[in-house]
Image (tube, rainbow, N blue to C red):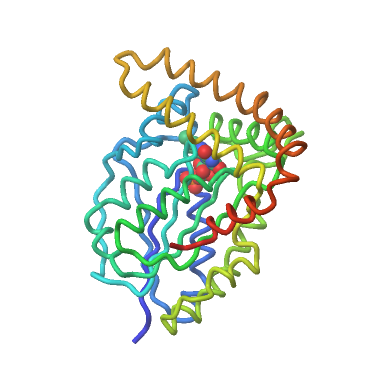
Length: 299
Ligand SMILES: Cc1cc2nc3c(=O)[nH]c(=O)nc-3n(C[C@H](O)[C@H](O)[C@H](O)COP(=O)(O)O)c2cc1C
């Protein structure tokens, strides 16, 4: 009997949908039955975002507050593999992901089932991935591998281009000077490589070694300076989210957070980066290796 896989995801712009489609194509071509479920929200965040709308979702993202999703049906009660698409929003699992992954039907099929997680992020996905790992652990799922596709341009460049994309709904070259935002078309098209790698594992139902095989094809781009910035920013975001969520009038606080974030991204992060490269990184090889190992660890 053919193996059954479920690919479940949310995608606002269609980027993660394309990534998941390309990942699944080789599985479908070898005869694996792939059920795809695209989740939508009852109050959809329509692209383009307004600047205020974009920042307003920060507290719920960071604090893991779910939103209502439109009804969906899973055809099976169990699967041989679940392919789970997630986004990082404010260094946390996105609200749509957090909402569908906790849905009782998804929780039921996740239990004891091998899972491959896939994200298409700007470049700061590690904190969100840690959150996803925790959710999967609580769900009793068996994480078998993770693929993180990112915008490979310089951090500051990708900040400018993602705002152009999100606030204008244009995935094109801003001012004809900047590169296209998001995961490159080439990397999206090449996601099938990872799908092909996964096929023997799903056929044998033996998952040991999959993550190493995916990493041979650069399934995750682990850049120490981004991991470092994320680890510091994640703590600050949590503090802001807790304060803002308790306020009656959130508008002024969200505006303050917006300016805090812009100053952090464009001024503080580059300074911290230079200080770290000069004074800390040269002496932290063991620590950096441990950090990367902990990200690669599936447990
Ligand atoms: C509100 C919001 C916050 C985001 N925060 C992050 C982030 O912290 N780190 C990151 O790498 N990408 C971030 N992104 C980019 C998303 O992870 C994702 O790449 C982009 O939204 C495209 O996904 P889609 O397939 O849902 O359209 C954010 C996007 C949105 C809309």
